[in-house]
Length: 263
Image 1: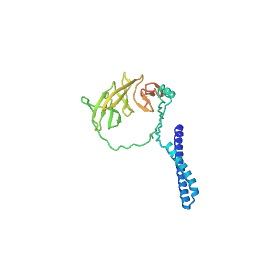
Image 2 (image 1 turned 90 degrees about the vertical axis):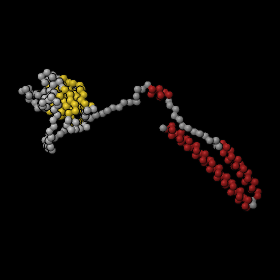
Image 3 (image 1 turned 45 degrees about the vertical axis):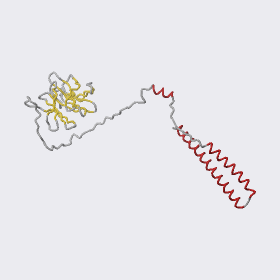
Image 4 (image 1 turned 135 degrees about the vertical axis):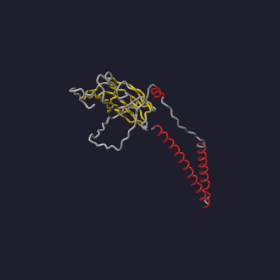
């Protein structure tokens, strides 16, 4: 930028010099013209020759200057890249990297806040050949879609805005709880005598898509997703896991009875 500014300043100075020279010659010719008229009017013949001589010299000087500056000069500015710098850039895989910074913020909800029921409606979400169903968990999605976990029939069901079942996904056992992971994905705890797992299910284009599955050595009842971690209850303990299923810590345990925790 400094080099460009210097070049622009040089061009402006050159134009100003030409303009000043033209203005100077014009003023000098005008002064000589006025002087000659004054000499003629006053009848000073002896000065007429001298004034005419000076006028001819100034006219010749002006014509010479005009001849020297009568050519139209076309100027252009072009950028000439530094070859060494170009070679250096060609060896780089990039000019930097984009770093995404996230900050975890825990939003606390008042546990004593009272909720008021505005109304209640009943809908039948049983499929054919299902005598009954037992909804144990529910998650809402965008586009007026709702996912319910049917413990009795061992499946999750996707409902539309009219609470009609549009599709379902069969699980490996009884669903015990469900929580939302992303705006289009949930995690379902599945538990029976031989099965202790968390099944991930996504909603895509109005269909339920099976995702990855995490298996555990303890029973899986309650589940929550908080700040990129999974919290599982087993009936007697509360565990904290990573999203990949790695145990981070056991937060609580009471083995004084078969079910001692709030599952």
